[in-house]
Length: 593
Image (cartoon, rainbow, N blue to C red; front, top):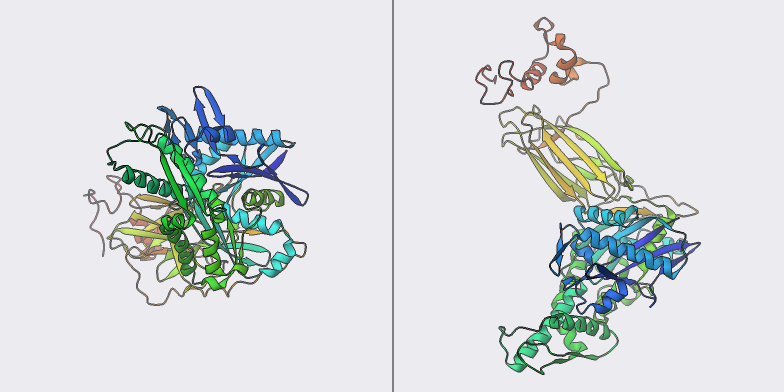
C-alpha cells in the first residue's frame, strides 16, 4: 500500500507516486490529467473525461446536470443540480473515487493507503475539513495538506539535482506563481540551508482562468447584440451561453499558439431564427480585453513583495505553473518583471504540484511553522503561543496549549487578544520587528477591577487541517470569544546526505523589564507568571491558595492585603452566590477602594 500525492485541482485532478528516484503520474487514456467534472443522468453518475465531453460550459459552477470542480462548492451545505439538492462533499468524494479508479486502470499500483493532498492558499478551515471528509468517504485518509504552490516548489527541487539546487539558491528568494483555472496562488519563499520556508502567501479566485473565459464571452455577446441591434431584453436559447463559454475557453487556449481564432456558436438568441454568433478574435484584441485582469493578477505580486520589503530584483527564481502561465502575455510580463534568466516554466508544469505532493509523501517530511504565532501583550511585548519550527499535526492529531493571563487595564470593560506573526521567520525575533495581525478576540471584563485582578484564560490548538484556533475567556465575567486562522506560513526540510547546518537566527529578544514605568492601553493583556525560585506562599494567587490552604487567610497570620483582595474578588457572595462585581448582589459589602 502506498501514500501518494493527490492534486485535487479546480479543473483537473492527478495522482502521482515516487518509484525510486522518479515520479510516476497516473494520467487518463488521453495522457492528460483527469477532469474534475461530474454529470448526473438520473441515478447514473458520469465522471472525468466523459463528463467533460458533455460539458458545454467549461467555467466553474453548476450547469444543467453537470458540475465542474465541485471543490469550489466545499463549505456549502448543499447545491442544486437540475433541481436536485446534492452535497458538495458527496460530489467531491465521487470525483476522488473516480480518479483513484482511473489510476488503478492506467497503471499497476499496489493500493493506496493514504494521500498528501494539495490545497489552494485561500482555502478556509471549514472547506479543508469538508475536503478531508470527502476523501474519507472515498476510502482515503489524508495524511496531510500542503499548499499547491509550495508542493510545486518542493517537486521542482526534488525532481532535479537536489544538492546543486540547494547550493545555487541557498538564502535566496523564490517566488512560485501558480495561475490556474480557479485561483491565482502565490508563495514567496526563502531557502535556508536544507529548509525551504514560506515568507508570505497570497491567493485569490478573482482572476482565475474561468473569469477570463467569462470576460471574453461578455465581449462576444455584446458585439452580437450590437450587430443585430438587439436589446438586453432578448434572451438566449437555453444552453447557448454554456456552449459559447466552452468555445471562449478553447479560444483562450488556442491563442497561446495562434494569432487569431474563430468563435462560432449556432442558434444563440431566442425568437430569432438562423442567427449564429460568429466572432473573429485576434490575440492582440484578446490581450486588450483581459488587460485589467492581468493587471490585477500582477499587482498581487508587487503587493506581496512590498509587504515584506523586497523588490522584484531580489527574487532569484520565479517558478510559473498553472494553465494560465502558458499565455504569451503572462510569460512576457513575468520576463519584464523578473528578467528571462530568472523565470522558469517547468516542462512538467501540469503535473508538478502532484509530483511535489508525492515527493513529500515519499520523503515522509512534515510541515513545520515558519514563524512564531504570537500574542500581543501590554507594553509592546509579545508572547510566543506556538514557536517556529513546531511540526504540524498529521492525520487525527491536534496540538493544544493553555495560557494564564491578566488584564492590565480593564477600564473599558474589554480585554483584547491580538494574534500576530512576525514577518521574519525563525523563533528568535526582536521586539521591534514588524508583525502582521492574523486575528482578534475580545472578552468582557469587570471595568471596575484593578490592574491584574481580572484573570483571563487562552486555549489554543492547531489541527490536522493546518488551522489555528484560539478560545479566550474571562473568569469573573465568564465571557468568551474565539477566532480561527488558516493563513499560516510553513516550512519543509529537504532530505540531504550532508545535512548542512541551518543558519542561526538573530540574537534572543531581550527580556522585558516589568519595572519600567510604561502605561498600558485599556484592555491590554499581560502574562500571569507562575515561576518562582523559592517556596513562598505570597507568590500564589489568593483565590488559588485559599482553595487548598484557607488557614493562611486567618487574620492572626496577617496575610498580604493583595492576596486577601484576590481571594474575595473571586469568591462568590455567601448569601446570593453572585459574583463579587455583580450589581444585582445587594448583600455584599461596599467595594473597597
